[in-house]
Image (cartoon, rainbow, N blue to C red; front, side, top):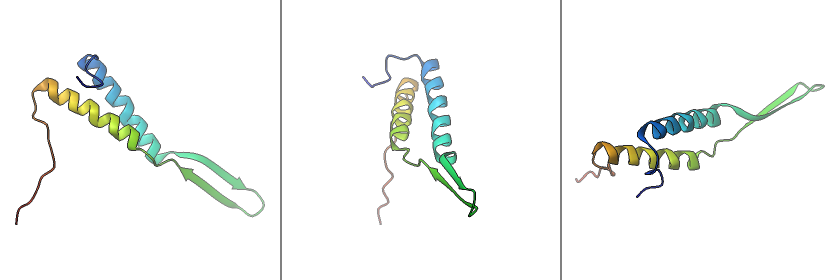
Length: 80
């Protein structure tokens, strides 16, 4: 039983949509911006530590795949 197994499929899809929006916002929107009026210097900082959101998205995707009967995907290894 996964973390998200108690949620309905519709709830999981809504949670995934919110997390995806949060991830995009975290990667693109500045968390702080400053302007030093006299010297005209500007700076912005971005919070690009999205690993926790990605982890939750992977867990939701795994639960949705399990429900749809899709085989879990693992890494692809190339043999030479």
